[in-house]
Length: 94
Image 1: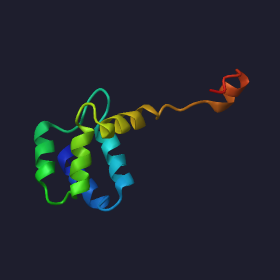
Image 2: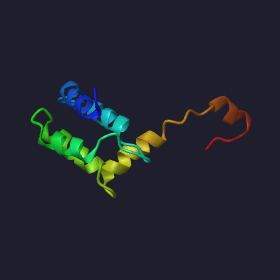
Image 3: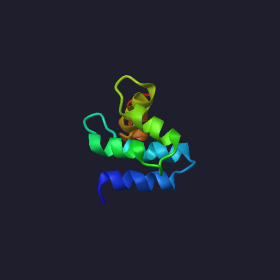
Image 4: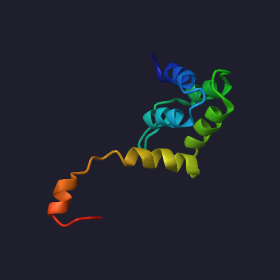
């Protein structure tokens, strides 16, 4: 399965669940790269399986400077695990 097919299936799975759709976006859009090609994006934006919400958020998540893109990228940045006990022992509470 390629990334286009993955996102079509994701759109079906997350049909009316915006939070779930964003989790799929987190998987394909990263700071350093995007798994989708420009052709994939064009095809997704024309695909009737995606809801209007999914199409808009996909397009915004791929557009530099939008709040949606920053939200997706920020969610990916937060994934670093923190050792809470170590931080408490070291007196680092921030």
